Length: 158
Image 1 (cartoon, helix red, strand yellow):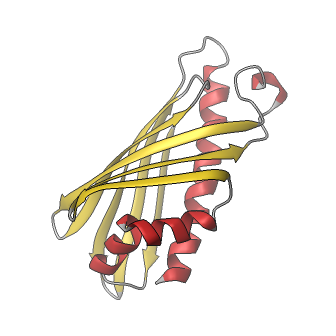
Image 2 (cartoon, helix red, strand yellow):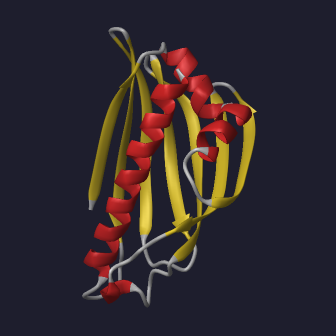
C-alpha cells in the first residue's frame, strides 16, 4: 500500500526544517500527537540530522488481524535528513515491534510561494499470507491519520 500526504506550511523551508529536526521542537510536536513513553534522540548537525523517535501507541485493529496487531504498540522510527535541492528530505523507516509490516518512506520539505510544503511518501507491505493486505491497509490508514495530525500540529507551530 502506498501513502502520499502533502500539506502547505506558512513558514520558510529553513524554519520548517528546524521545527522538524530540533530536539525541543520535536518534543513539543510529539507531545501533542498522543502516545506514551516518548523518547527522541537527535544526532548530527544540520542539515545532516538523524532522529530516532519511539513511543507506545494505541491501536484498534479489525478482528481479523488482532492476532498480529495488539491494541498497544511500541512504534519506533528513524529519520535521516539531508539537503534536497532548495529544501530538505528525510529517509524514514518505521518499526512496529511484533507487527509483521514493513514501512519505509520519505518526508520532503520544499519551498513554495508563501511558505513551503511538507510531503510524506510511504510504502507499506506485509508478507503474511492472506492477511498481509489487511495488515498493510490498516497500518497505512493509521499512518495517514497520524501524518494528517502531525501536519495540523506543524501548521499551528509555524
